[in-house]
Image 1 (cartoon, rainbow, N blue to C red):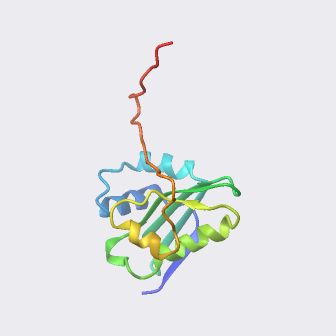
Image 2: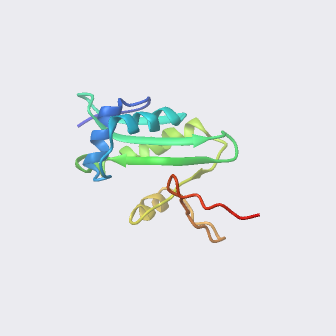
Length: 138
């Protein structure tokens, strides 16, 4: 099955359906639309019929860092080079900036096979949920 991979903003409904197929929890189209709008770089992989089967999102300053947001490919369309093609388009868009990813689980092997390295200095991914900010007493 031929695919098209191109920079574009997906429809929120179709991306919500893709994320649901990935078992990424329940994603309302409204929330997904806000996420899509925030990213300056989004790349989509679609079937010949136009169905969204892959999505990449990223932030970049164009010179010092590119931060990968999401990189997903529908399970029925994995292992066909779609994620690699989306990463290649990202690298072409920001050729001077290194790309950073938060590789979870088995995705580490995927990124390592594409030339991503583990930094020599320890790096920890941290997060904070909305409304959980701790105040620091003066």
